[in-house]
Image 1: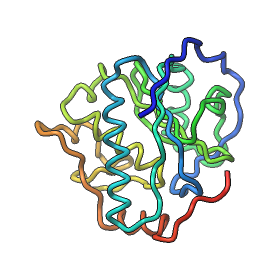
Image 2: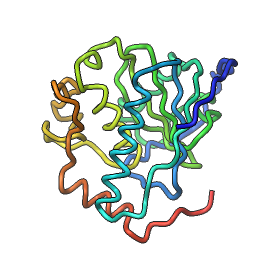
Image 3: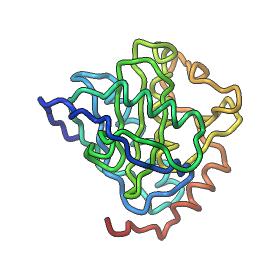
Image 4: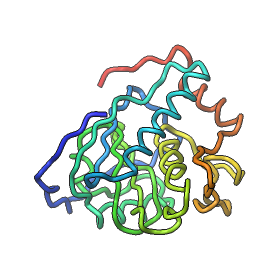
Length: 217
């Protein structure tokens, strides 16, 4: 993973711009990943693990798609804007979302923000150029304080970021709303990533077949 220290804070980003909640959309290019958060955050290693999980899964399926390189930025997270964006995504808004300008200006295609505040972790906001945002709540807030939960929450949200939706099976990685699956179910004494359903594997291969090739920027 590349690592950079950014001394400057985010510019004030209260200007909103439109995005579309296009869940289930596939990537048309190999997404460069940017992870933003505090120095020494243990979730950075979990992001690497999640990226490796998805790339290995795609390889095993025979898909031509892979998640791209990960760049690390030590930089303040716009907590209030991130929480507001997550509330909009989780409210199930259809069509256009109003997204603070700061999220458009972040580097990378798939931007993962490791927050300190308490909110429901989410993935969403697919811009015209396919930029996608993942927000992960602070590690000091339950249920991320439980063993193995943060690992699976991050992997779950990356699953959304590559196009998967929720399922209703509490033994599987992508279980979630509106079904009564919550992140605490990922608790485990042993580190492990929950599996996908057979249907999800088929969906991944349909979105990203063996002949998948990145298109232009």
